[in-house]
Image (cartoon, rainbow, N blue to C red):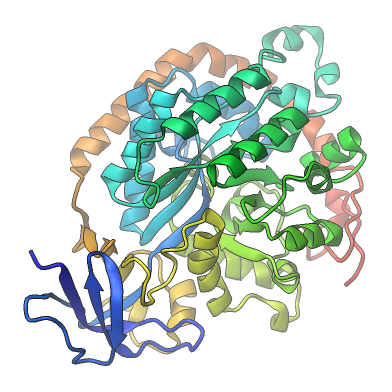
Length: 511
């Protein structure tokens, strides 16, 4: 087989220019060697790929997901963050290594079939995943064909201890049911993480191991500092949930006397290797800190709405010069792994936040966040664009599809009209992983059977813990709802716009 491939006759998306001119792309050993007008010279033995009647765009980058959730997708409709944090550990428990591989593989296949070629996956942990499990889940991404940062979620404090006053609010009978203590020792968590980083067997250009101190409220200062030390020693990246929900923002003020982001910054762990998932409840001082330290934010608009957490001010983030990514969040909190939907949600919530359309996100800004921005955040400099020197991670959209009839502004249509149904082929390193809409490595009927069996087994094993959680639900969510009703003043910001501030207990200063 020739080391050269030439893609001919496709319309290459120029997002910033809002155009899609006809271009040929010459690939050598998986890297883009040259891009030119139709008729571009190529070696005689180059494999020719006909891209006529297709729009080509860079593989999408999912800036925040959880490979833990595919087997529990769609099990609940009304579902906020405190419910998720309370309920999902019981449903996630007792998974075999094979189940954890299957969870990860299902999500990776879905992303591949929907045009995503790189994911930042905050994967199993809580309390801690074994090295064998991490390596198996990394293999799931290799087998599915897409790239990933695998960042196990770490904590050394329980959910109950992470919310000031929650334990004390529970009556004695409920307190006896709750798993209030029992988090692993900090030293054990860091030792396992360090050993996993040393032993990581996978090609780091495809799947690298990151670190995810899951939420600062459930991570001691020692754990946060240890994660930062390991990330710097091993040249990898960190992501943490910060400013996701108002109840957490209020809890941080009560626990630290300052915002969660300010506390993290005071520890000295912010930097280009550090990214923030959600970032809804961040004020201007928080955003300034993020910008000054060169950290990134994954904007997960669909999940933020699904969980009722609020609307992040992505425009303000860009004004501060923060590198922005787009994420779906996990299948538990956003139900699917469709980056086209995540981009569309980012555009829609920008319009809902405030009436001045000149401050809404533009389609080119959203596309940039969903490609280059996500790749930068993940530390994958070799992807994120169709450009000379980059790896050939390319999505082919059929133009013989209603989404593209006719083509007016291709950037706007990619964000607001495309829904993954026009995805025809997906290429990683110049090799097809999806061809004619089919994931080449997967038997979908077999996958469905395995998923059904795994779901049934998990429900059987976890029935008792799930029942405990259902008993605790009203008391825990009632306490957290009370936190969310407390005033929380954030300069120039309203996470619940359009007259909802009074109902949420939120006081906003007009811009």
